[in-house]
Length: 295
Ligand SMILES: *[C@@H]1O[C@H](CO)[C@@H](O)[C@H](O)[C@H]1NC(C)=O
Ligand SMILES: *[C@@H]1O[C@H](CO)[C@@H](O)[C@H](O)[C@H]1NC(C)=O
Ligand SMILES: *[C@@H]1O[C@H](CO)[C@@H](O)[C@H](O)[C@H]1NC(C)=O
Image (cartoon, rainbow, N blue to C red; front, side):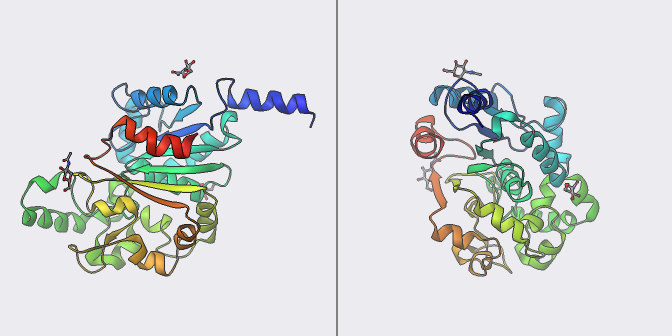
Protein backbone atom coordinates (compact mmCIF):
# COMPACT_ATOMS: atom_id res chain seq x y z
CA UNK A 1 0.00 0.00 0.00
CA UNK A 2 1.44 3.38 -0.82
CA UNK A 3 2.29 5.66 2.06
CA UNK A 4 0.02 8.54 1.15
CA UNK A 5 -2.96 6.24 0.76
CA UNK A 6 -2.17 4.60 4.08
CA UNK A 7 -1.85 8.01 5.74
CA UNK A 8 -5.22 9.12 4.37
CA UNK A 9 -6.80 5.91 5.53
CA UNK A 10 -5.51 6.42 9.06
CA UNK A 11 -6.66 10.04 9.09
CA UNK A 12 -10.09 9.18 7.76
CA UNK A 13 -10.67 6.21 9.97
CA UNK A 14 -9.39 7.83 13.15
CA UNK A 15 -10.92 11.18 12.45
CA UNK A 16 -8.71 14.22 12.09
CA UNK A 17 -9.43 15.23 15.68
CA UNK A 18 -6.63 13.43 17.43
CA UNK A 19 -4.35 10.46 17.58
CA UNK A 20 -6.02 9.22 20.75
CA UNK A 21 -7.29 5.66 20.60
CA UNK A 22 -11.08 5.67 20.06
CA UNK A 23 -13.28 4.77 23.00
CA UNK A 24 -16.44 2.68 23.22
CA UNK A 25 -18.84 3.11 26.15
CA UNK A 26 -21.53 0.73 27.37
CA UNK A 27 -24.07 2.10 29.84
CA UNK A 28 -25.65 0.34 32.81
CA UNK A 29 -29.13 -0.86 33.79
CA UNK A 30 -31.90 1.70 33.32
CA UNK A 31 -29.57 4.10 31.56
CA UNK A 32 -29.02 4.92 27.89
CA UNK A 33 -26.16 5.75 25.57
CA UNK A 34 -26.77 9.44 25.67
CA UNK A 35 -28.75 11.00 28.51
CA UNK A 36 -27.31 14.47 29.14
CA UNK A 37 -27.28 13.81 32.91
CA UNK A 38 -25.28 10.57 32.65
CA UNK A 39 -23.32 9.14 29.73
CA UNK A 40 -23.85 12.20 27.56
CA UNK A 41 -22.09 14.31 30.18
CA UNK A 42 -19.42 11.67 30.71
CA UNK A 43 -18.70 11.52 26.99
CA UNK A 44 -18.30 15.29 26.83
CA UNK A 45 -15.89 15.40 29.78
CA UNK A 46 -13.89 12.49 28.42
CA UNK A 47 -13.55 14.18 25.05
CA UNK A 48 -12.45 17.40 26.79
CA UNK A 49 -9.90 15.69 29.00
CA UNK A 50 -8.35 13.97 26.01
CA UNK A 51 -8.45 17.06 23.80
CA UNK A 52 -10.70 15.31 21.30
CA UNK A 53 -11.23 11.60 20.70
CA UNK A 54 -13.69 9.46 18.75
CA UNK A 55 -16.23 8.08 21.22
CA UNK A 56 -18.97 5.61 20.38
CA UNK A 57 -21.58 5.12 23.10
CA UNK A 58 -23.50 1.89 22.56
CA UNK A 59 -27.26 2.16 22.03
CA UNK A 60 -29.29 -1.04 21.92
CA UNK A 61 -32.43 -0.41 19.89
CA UNK A 62 -33.60 2.33 17.58
CA UNK A 63 -33.90 5.12 20.12
CA UNK A 64 -33.10 6.09 23.71
CA UNK A 65 -36.34 4.69 25.14
CA UNK A 66 -35.74 1.29 23.56
CA UNK A 67 -32.16 1.48 24.78
CA UNK A 68 -33.35 1.83 28.39
CA UNK A 69 -35.95 -0.95 28.00
CA UNK A 70 -33.42 -3.26 26.43
CA UNK A 71 -31.12 -2.85 29.44
CA UNK A 72 -33.79 -4.78 31.36
CA UNK A 73 -35.38 -7.05 28.79
CA UNK A 74 -33.16 -7.84 25.83
CA UNK A 75 -31.32 -11.15 26.09
CA UNK A 76 -27.65 -10.23 26.70
CA UNK A 77 -26.21 -12.64 24.13
CA UNK A 78 -28.41 -10.98 21.51
CA UNK A 79 -27.18 -7.60 22.69
CA UNK A 80 -23.62 -8.82 22.17
CA UNK A 81 -24.38 -10.06 18.66
CA UNK A 82 -25.92 -6.76 17.67
CA UNK A 83 -23.05 -4.79 19.20
CA UNK A 84 -20.47 -7.05 17.57
CA UNK A 85 -21.94 -6.23 14.16
CA UNK A 86 -22.20 -2.50 14.80
CA UNK A 87 -18.67 -2.08 16.11
CA UNK A 88 -17.12 -4.30 13.44
CA UNK A 89 -18.72 -2.14 10.76
CA UNK A 90 -17.47 1.17 12.21
CA UNK A 91 -14.44 2.32 10.17
CA UNK A 92 -13.25 4.52 13.04
CA UNK A 93 -12.73 1.42 15.19
CA UNK A 94 -10.85 -0.86 12.79
CA UNK A 95 -7.45 -0.09 14.29
CA UNK A 96 -8.65 -0.92 17.77
CA UNK A 97 -10.30 0.89 20.65
CA UNK A 98 -10.45 1.12 24.41
CA UNK A 99 -13.72 0.33 26.14
CA UNK A 100 -15.38 1.56 29.31
CA UNK A 101 -18.31 -0.34 30.80
CA UNK A 102 -20.61 1.08 33.44
CA UNK A 103 -22.03 -1.46 35.88
CA UNK A 104 -23.63 -4.32 33.86
CA UNK A 105 -22.15 -2.68 30.74
CA UNK A 106 -18.82 -3.87 32.17
CA UNK A 107 -19.64 -7.57 32.07
CA UNK A 108 -21.29 -7.05 28.67
CA UNK A 109 -18.12 -5.53 27.21
CA UNK A 110 -16.13 -8.43 28.65
CA UNK A 111 -18.56 -10.85 27.01
CA UNK A 112 -18.18 -8.88 23.81
CA UNK A 113 -14.40 -9.21 23.67
CA UNK A 114 -14.78 -12.95 24.37
CA UNK A 115 -17.45 -13.55 21.74
CA UNK A 116 -16.70 -11.09 18.95
CA UNK A 117 -13.54 -11.98 16.98
CA UNK A 118 -13.94 -9.13 14.50
CA UNK A 119 -13.18 -6.27 16.91
CA UNK A 120 -9.88 -5.18 18.40
CA UNK A 121 -10.38 -4.11 22.00
CA UNK A 122 -7.18 -2.91 23.68
CA UNK A 123 -7.91 -1.83 27.25
CA UNK A 124 -11.14 -2.74 28.99
CA UNK A 125 -12.15 -0.63 31.96
CA UNK A 126 -15.09 -1.78 34.03
CA UNK A 127 -16.67 0.56 36.57
CA UNK A 128 -18.65 -1.25 39.26
CA UNK A 129 -19.27 -4.28 37.01
CA UNK A 130 -20.58 -7.61 38.30
CA UNK A 131 -18.04 -10.04 36.90
CA UNK A 132 -19.23 -12.77 39.24
CA UNK A 133 -22.84 -11.65 39.23
CA UNK A 134 -24.99 -10.48 42.12
CA UNK A 135 -26.81 -12.09 44.99
CA UNK A 136 -28.95 -9.36 46.49
CA UNK A 137 -31.26 -6.50 45.64
CA UNK A 138 -29.88 -3.03 44.91
CA UNK A 139 -29.92 -0.75 47.99
CA UNK A 140 -31.23 -3.54 50.23
CA UNK A 141 -28.50 -2.79 52.77
CA UNK A 142 -30.72 -0.02 54.11
CA UNK A 143 -33.04 -2.74 55.46
CA UNK A 144 -32.19 -5.20 58.26
CA UNK A 145 -29.92 -8.02 57.09
CA UNK A 146 -32.50 -10.77 57.80
CA UNK A 147 -35.05 -9.15 55.51
CA UNK A 148 -32.61 -8.76 52.64
CA UNK A 149 -31.37 -12.27 53.15
CA UNK A 150 -34.92 -13.66 52.98
CA UNK A 151 -35.67 -11.58 49.90
CA UNK A 152 -32.70 -12.89 47.96
CA UNK A 153 -33.58 -16.48 48.90
CA UNK A 154 -37.07 -15.94 47.56
CA UNK A 155 -35.75 -14.33 44.36
CA UNK A 156 -33.46 -17.29 43.81
CA UNK A 157 -36.48 -19.55 43.49
CA UNK A 158 -37.55 -17.62 40.39
CA UNK A 159 -34.31 -16.35 38.92
CA UNK A 160 -33.27 -19.58 37.22
CA UNK A 161 -36.63 -20.28 35.69
CA UNK A 162 -36.18 -20.53 31.89
CA UNK A 163 -38.82 -17.93 31.21
CA UNK A 164 -37.30 -15.45 33.66
CA UNK A 165 -33.84 -16.03 32.18
CA UNK A 166 -35.25 -15.28 28.74
CA UNK A 167 -36.96 -12.04 29.60
CA UNK A 168 -35.03 -10.43 32.43
CA UNK A 169 -31.44 -9.33 31.83
CA UNK A 170 -30.54 -9.11 35.51
CA UNK A 171 -31.58 -12.73 36.12
CA UNK A 172 -28.93 -13.84 33.63
CA UNK A 173 -26.22 -12.76 36.04
CA UNK A 174 -27.99 -13.72 39.27
CA UNK A 175 -25.48 -15.85 41.18
CA UNK A 176 -26.82 -17.90 44.08
CA UNK A 177 -23.74 -19.17 45.96
CA UNK A 178 -25.85 -21.55 48.06
CA UNK A 179 -26.97 -23.32 44.90
CA UNK A 180 -23.78 -23.02 42.91
CA UNK A 181 -24.60 -25.97 40.60
CA UNK A 182 -27.96 -24.49 39.63
CA UNK A 183 -26.26 -21.19 38.89
CA UNK A 184 -23.64 -22.86 36.74
CA UNK A 185 -26.20 -24.72 34.66
CA UNK A 186 -29.00 -22.19 34.42
CA UNK A 187 -27.38 -18.75 34.36
CA UNK A 188 -27.88 -17.80 30.73
CA UNK A 189 -25.27 -15.08 30.54
CA UNK A 190 -22.68 -15.35 33.29
CA UNK A 191 -22.60 -19.14 33.34
CA UNK A 192 -21.77 -18.94 29.64
CA UNK A 193 -19.12 -16.21 29.55
CA UNK A 194 -17.43 -17.34 32.77
CA UNK A 195 -16.88 -20.82 31.27
CA UNK A 196 -18.92 -22.46 34.04
CA UNK A 197 -20.55 -25.11 31.83
CA UNK A 198 -17.65 -25.95 29.58
CA UNK A 199 -14.32 -24.39 28.75
CA UNK A 200 -14.50 -22.30 25.62
CA UNK A 201 -10.88 -21.86 24.56
CA UNK A 202 -11.78 -18.96 22.26
CA UNK A 203 -13.07 -17.02 25.25
CA UNK A 204 -9.74 -17.49 27.01
CA UNK A 205 -7.63 -16.46 24.04
CA UNK A 206 -9.74 -13.44 23.19
CA UNK A 207 -9.83 -12.22 26.79
CA UNK A 208 -6.06 -12.61 26.95
CA UNK A 209 -5.74 -10.50 23.80
CA UNK A 210 -6.60 -7.47 25.96
CA UNK A 211 -3.68 -5.29 26.93
CA UNK A 212 -5.27 -4.55 30.29
CA UNK A 213 -8.42 -5.41 32.19
CA UNK A 214 -9.00 -2.63 34.69
CA UNK A 215 -11.65 -3.27 37.34
CA UNK A 216 -12.86 -0.39 39.47
CA UNK A 217 -14.62 -1.14 42.76
CA UNK A 218 -16.68 1.46 44.61
CA UNK A 219 -15.92 1.16 48.32
CA UNK A 220 -19.32 2.44 49.45
CA UNK A 221 -21.38 0.70 46.76
CA UNK A 222 -24.99 0.11 47.83
CA UNK A 223 -26.13 -1.39 44.52
CA UNK A 224 -23.93 -4.43 44.04
CA UNK A 225 -23.97 -7.36 46.42
CA UNK A 226 -21.37 -8.53 47.12
CA UNK A 227 -19.19 -5.60 46.10
CA UNK A 228 -16.26 -8.04 45.61
CA UNK A 229 -17.91 -9.00 42.30
CA UNK A 230 -16.58 -5.70 40.91
CA UNK A 231 -13.10 -7.23 41.32
CA UNK A 232 -14.19 -10.68 40.10
CA UNK A 233 -14.50 -11.99 43.67
CA UNK A 234 -17.67 -13.44 45.19
CA UNK A 235 -19.18 -15.33 48.12
CA UNK A 236 -17.40 -18.58 48.90
CA UNK A 237 -19.51 -21.39 47.43
CA UNK A 238 -22.15 -22.91 49.71
CA UNK A 239 -22.96 -19.85 51.80
CA UNK A 240 -23.64 -16.14 51.47
CA UNK A 241 -21.69 -14.39 54.22
CA UNK A 242 -17.99 -14.85 53.65
CA UNK A 243 -16.44 -13.65 50.44
CA UNK A 244 -13.34 -14.69 48.52
CA UNK A 245 -11.11 -12.79 46.14
CA UNK A 246 -10.65 -13.72 42.51
CA UNK A 247 -7.26 -15.20 43.39
CA UNK A 248 -8.86 -17.48 46.00
CA UNK A 249 -11.61 -18.69 43.68
CA UNK A 250 -11.55 -21.96 41.74
CA UNK A 251 -12.19 -19.97 38.54
CA UNK A 252 -8.70 -18.59 39.06
CA UNK A 253 -6.86 -21.52 40.63
CA UNK A 254 -8.17 -23.92 37.94
CA UNK A 255 -7.63 -21.10 35.42
CA UNK A 256 -10.90 -21.78 33.62
CA UNK A 257 -10.95 -18.30 32.05
CA UNK A 258 -7.26 -17.54 31.62
CA UNK A 259 -7.30 -14.87 34.33
CA UNK A 260 -4.40 -16.40 36.24
CA UNK A 261 -2.13 -15.98 33.26
CA UNK A 262 -3.35 -12.41 32.75
CA UNK A 263 -2.66 -11.68 36.41
CA UNK A 264 0.86 -13.08 36.12
CA UNK A 265 1.41 -10.84 33.10
CA UNK A 266 0.21 -7.84 35.16
CA UNK A 267 -2.74 -7.30 32.84
CA UNK A 268 -5.28 -7.25 35.66
CA UNK A 269 -5.69 -4.01 37.60
CA UNK A 270 -7.75 -3.76 40.77
CA UNK A 271 -8.61 -0.14 41.53
CA UNK A 272 -10.89 1.17 44.23
CA UNK A 273 -12.42 4.54 44.84
CA UNK A 274 -14.44 5.93 47.72
CA UNK A 275 -18.08 6.56 46.96
CA UNK A 276 -21.35 4.87 46.00
CA UNK A 277 -22.03 3.01 42.76
CA UNK A 278 -20.49 4.83 39.76
CA UNK A 279 -19.73 7.93 41.84
CA UNK A 280 -16.20 9.19 41.43
CA UNK A 281 -14.41 12.53 41.34
CA UNK A 282 -13.38 13.42 37.79
CA UNK A 283 -9.85 14.22 38.97
CA UNK A 284 -9.58 10.62 40.25
CA UNK A 285 -10.72 9.33 36.85
CA UNK A 286 -8.23 11.54 35.03
CA UNK A 287 -5.29 10.48 37.17
CA UNK A 288 -6.04 6.78 37.46
CA UNK A 289 -7.77 5.89 34.21
CA UNK A 290 -7.25 8.52 31.54
CA UNK A 291 -3.55 9.16 32.22
CA UNK A 292 -2.66 5.49 32.60
CA UNK A 293 -4.86 3.69 30.08
CA UNK A 294 -6.46 6.06 27.60
CA UNK A 295 -3.56 8.24 26.47
C1 LIG B 1 -14.21 17.05 21.32
O1 LIG B 1 -13.11 17.88 21.61
C2 LIG B 1 -12.59 18.53 20.46
C3 LIG B 1 -11.28 19.23 20.86
O2 LIG B 1 -11.44 19.93 22.05
C4 LIG B 1 -13.63 19.50 19.92
O3 LIG B 1 -13.14 20.15 18.79
C5 LIG B 1 -14.87 18.68 19.57
O4 LIG B 1 -15.91 19.57 19.16
C6 LIG B 1 -15.34 17.86 20.74
N1 LIG B 1 -16.40 16.97 20.29
C7 LIG B 1 -17.54 16.85 20.94
C8 LIG B 1 -18.52 15.91 20.35
O5 LIG B 1 -17.78 17.44 21.97
C1 LIG C 1 -24.93 -14.82 17.91
O1 LIG C 1 -24.16 -15.01 16.77
C2 LIG C 1 -23.53 -16.27 16.72
C3 LIG C 1 -22.54 -16.24 15.58
O2 LIG C 1 -23.07 -15.61 14.45
C4 LIG C 1 -24.58 -17.33 16.58
O3 LIG C 1 -23.98 -18.59 16.51
C5 LIG C 1 -25.47 -17.27 17.80
O4 LIG C 1 -26.52 -18.17 17.69
C6 LIG C 1 -26.01 -15.88 18.00
N1 LIG C 1 -26.57 -15.88 19.33
C7 LIG C 1 -27.74 -15.37 19.57
C8 LIG C 1 -28.18 -15.43 20.99
O5 LIG C 1 -28.41 -14.86 18.71
C1 LIG D 1 -16.95 4.82 52.57
O1 LIG D 1 -16.61 3.76 53.43
C2 LIG D 1 -15.44 3.99 54.18
C3 LIG D 1 -15.04 2.72 54.88
O2 LIG D 1 -16.14 2.05 55.38
C4 LIG D 1 -15.71 5.15 55.14
O3 LIG D 1 -14.56 5.42 55.94
C5 LIG D 1 -16.07 6.38 54.32
O4 LIG D 1 -16.44 7.45 55.16
C6 LIG D 1 -17.22 6.09 53.35
N1 LIG D 1 -17.33 7.20 52.44
C7 LIG D 1 -18.49 7.65 52.00
C8 LIG D 1 -18.43 8.76 51.00
O5 LIG D 1 -19.57 7.21 52.37
